[in-house]
Length: 189
Image 1 (tube, helix red, strand yellow):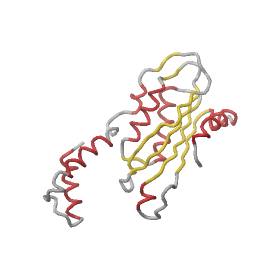
Image 2 (cartoon, rainbow, N blue to C red):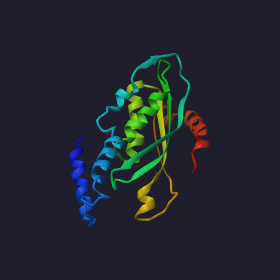
Image 3 (cartoon, rainbow, N blue to C red):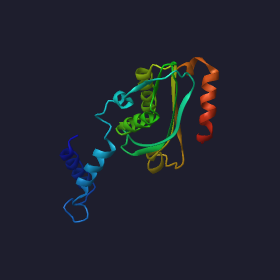
Image 4 (spheres, helix red, strand yellow):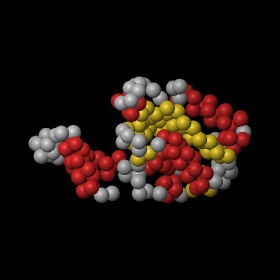
């Protein structure tokens, strides 16, 4: 990440707004914004597959669900935040499980980059499918987008819900229903 370029870009934005970047109130703003960007985009150079880390051998082939994972991200269309909760389920193959905190870390890494909610939903399940080779994986994201609140349509409180399912969650209605039932008290549709 090129912090100096981010600072210069912020200076141009301030000037574009007709403000003087050298004024006392705005003098350190470009540096603060650049520092903030290095934090909120810290997932850009991290391979999400590596976040999963060690896979444990465990004879388990029942549903694993990690729900209500809080996240925030920046929409790549307007560079405004979107935030909410992620629910992730997978059905192990009877052999591979992962430490449950790794699922939350995966969400964290994928959300800390310019992102689209739809893409992030797919990326979560694709990483789990590739690393754990489970019978299936599912992710549901419920989020509020500041671009829907602050600009354009201006509809605060509107929630966007996306889902991605792979493997048994697509093929077996009972498995999908069990996961959705366990998640449902968390989803506020």
